[in-house]
Length: 420
Ligand code: GLU
Image (cartoon, rainbow, N blue to C red; front, top):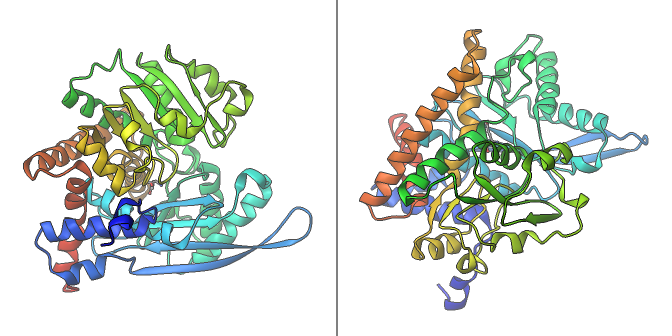
């Protein structure tokens, strides 16, 4: 590889993921054919969705649904609404979902969807028409035993409800198990909304134990105030941990004495925007380099790169977002002794409780909040320990260890099915 190019971050999340999958498979001793199978989704659908806008015009939106590998079971994963969604990103996100399912032992492969749009600048009714149009467009390849969507960046339980309703109309039967992350009254699960943040908290506690950090006095910075970031800030503040920094897409707030999280949550809009209300904000880039013990990137991809990795003050980074740290930055952080809990483990709480929701829908019998939380904790603590142990035993960083564990099950399933 060219010297200069090797120093530049691979901001292309798909090729970075492919290179770690390749490493993980070769460490596990699989042949090159296995990599050829797993490096891309087995199915990728691009759709064009016409939507009647409130002003009477028609706008055509582009959407995607990627199904990475269905050897283990139906594919599963969220749908994101974001102006920067790309085909490559959706592919990478579907691979990450396969890894998460493998890590927490769910009977799924990975899937992911995305629509290029900005719901923050659309009316409620326009978002509803877009959500329904997307389900009509992908209805042939999704379903409770094929591919089960869920919320992701800028989508929520209301959007899941519209999608469920559209699917039930097309199929002409009630099918709550078609989608997860639904409102409770439509068959949602207790604990699903806060599940990603709960999972991040569980991983953070385990990581703090390994590093000998006492969480009561610890300083935490959370980048992003969406679903994961805001619930996480709440859990931290309630537990007496000092949240010294938070941010949204427009800026960041930092106070080394700790921020008033309840106040900020009260003023946050439904998309997680809050910093616009303040004058003395800093940038997201500045926030990442501020003093803290634990840093949680909970926003979007490629936030910690070779440009800022050396300046990160935290001794633990817990990735609540998908893909926030580049390959090069992962290397820099691990050389500096920072314990990095990778996205495919730290953010697996969401899909784990989605699985619980699907199981409850399938059996028509619903669990309490405590039951859901207890089961989630058991699953994630075990996954954390397995990955941490493997990383110590094989002397690899936790990301590679997580990929090795995550990829093994789908590789085995593909082998047993005679695909490779
Ligand atoms: N979108 C979430 C994720 O990236 C959850 C997916 C799901 O619940 O299926 O893990």
